[in-house]
Image: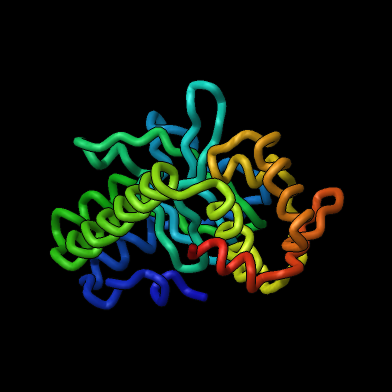
Length: 219
């Protein structure tokens, strides 16, 4: 897979602009669990996922994590280059959820492209709006949606991503994703198991009644 086929506005760049990106582009391979970007003081550059999956999350003062969005193949992360956005600084950590291959565009190169190219500027604004929409959706979920519905929704999402009802997930992983405590998630999963919705084993959650979980998540 070539970078040019993954960058949506590549064909709208001049040959010189394309060369500038190509010459500065950094290819990187990361292992599952590796932190790719850490906090607002770091300016990693713009990340574009060639393969694999990344997770962007924020960390509270108490050390609790909550996932704000995930990045899949061909997705781009702007917040890892928040230094180029003067009015917006984000303490967001990005880590690999699976072994992944990335392209990194240095922030100064992309910032120059935004000044020169209307298509790049428009694409960036659309991407930023989409990410803020993700964050606002998350805030609504936390404020208005009960934890049992959020857990059910998360399990169904994971099953769809992995294309399997048998999920290799720890209770701590689920808690980190949802911004909850491991003990709370354990109680919720045990309740789900007592209702015949899941089967629990060490490091694994198996969905046994997706129909009821889907009804719960959308109730």
